[in-house]
Length: 365
Picture 1: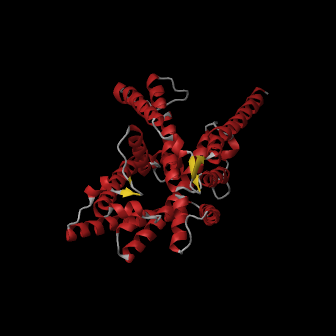
Picture 2: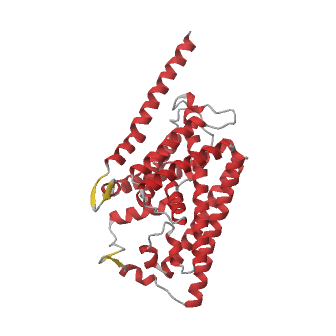
Picture 3: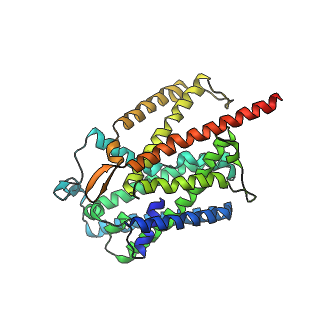
């Protein structure tokens, strides 16, 4: 999302959104701006997040309404052309294989990423036990309806323009009206900026929660006088800069990577549910009725599906980069992933283990 908002902003002001230097400078500016906004406190973050939600719904709602009006007034339907579209003599939509189907699922899954992080910020929310169970399913329903509406309109109205456009906000290309394009672009920009703010609110609190559970060093859980988790924020900010740089700010690669990482993370959820069902939890859990179908069979089924998707995933394409027409393995990206997924957690684990030993020694004394 940071890459998208930077490229969109550069495009609006007539710059080159594919320039590595331009995007890098924009990244630094954006991260500093997000840092300042978070320092102002939760009320400022809430205001910007609400504004971004309104902006996104208005922009996407406009796409659906304008597209529906054009379809009804002109009667044009280009949906049947999708399978025959070609670019450079090759079909844009390839033959369906297991691998392409898996990549399509992963790409579609990106639209629903983020729900797993909502609860991490519940401590700073208003009546989370009451509001979160209402907000999550309602949000999933709204997102499903909006995304299906936008995709349907785009595919029927002008699929070729959608696929061939070089615009950052591709859906704006299906309309010829410059006013409509401008409104959609600005709405998308406001939306993406708000998503960055939302991520900057939730992501640091994930590390903070792990620190409070003694999974990471305790000093990570300390906040500033303004109740701001500055230490965990700094770590997530550094990773937020390094990972997109490693993939040369390729929006497509980052979208797929973001969804794939969540697939890996989601394996933990069904394993946890199974442990709770078998009564092998380390800490106490809520007392509730247990159901073999929902608490054992469904989690096992979801693990098998996830492992199958990961097995069929096109890892070579994800970790390759094309520069000057030459495709090679992106070792910088591979190194960044190893650092973020293995080395950094290992360092934090060692530090946490040392803290525990010191605490145990103090208790013994």
